[in-house]
Amino acid sequence: MVNNEAVIRKIFTMKTIAVVGMSPRKQRPSNYVAMYMEDKGYDIIPVNPSHQNIQSKKCYPSLLDIPVKVDIVNVFRQSQFAASIAKEAVNIGAKAIWLQDGVISNEAYTIAKNAGLLFVMNDCMLRRHR
Image (cartoon, rainbow, N blue to C red; front, side):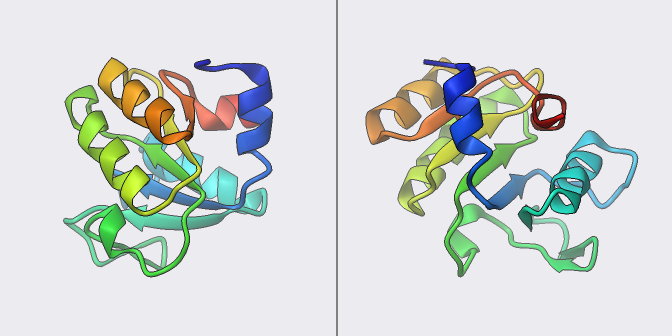
């Protein structure tokens, strides 16, 4: 089920979040949502091929380049990229995919569901966590 309260609560018990599309600009949602989650005790891993570091953290070009285990893949990319990101999330053994506000992909949902991943779509992690 998508955006189910029990699923969201379960996701929030996980601790490592890869933020795909994280911007270095502090006023961008991808940045301030990630920093809010870090302030709440989550480990944040920026994913953006255009940057080497964001918020003093090593930034990776793709999920496949991250050398540690990722629990949640938080997606701040356009909807057309969600399915390929979902495939990478499955490949790295992530446990959940969260598509932020405005990111909608039935294909990503199907990929996640078939792999047994928890899934949230078109919702804000910061707003739900508060």
